[in-house]
Image 1 (cartoon, one colour):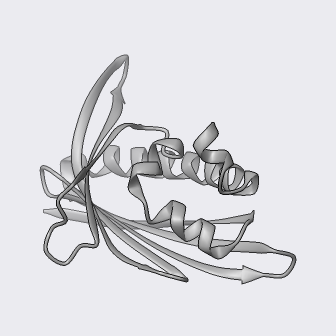
Image 2 (cartoon, rainbow, N blue to C red; image 1 turned 90 degrees about the horizontal axis):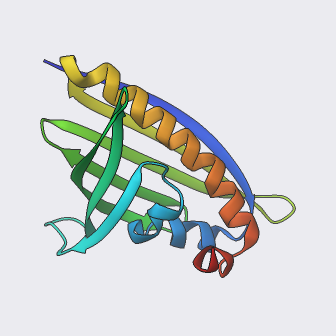
Length: 155
């Protein structure tokens, strides 16, 4: 039996919407942001995907750290929306729906909704890991975008 739940967060950054979309739509750059990612490889796109990636995270269970590799697909990138889906065995899916909009003063508002589904025995662990990782990503995202489009490549 699968369980499903959603969490969301908002980031505000002094950047153009185009810079935020460029960063969020290119998963090769997620290693800069996502605290669990240790490797990202570009793969041939799956049918219906704009781009596909093999991503390796380093997860922890108590004192033990172990790598987990999964496939992530970028399904949509527009000037105000990015949708990605990551799939990992067994039957675990993380859907990221990001909406972006301009706010006064050169600020971009980034609203992210993450929906995770996983088999019931894995759900609690997977959901806690995903939420902690994405909240860490949110903190890094604002800082990277505030520095400007060239700063993230240099860090």
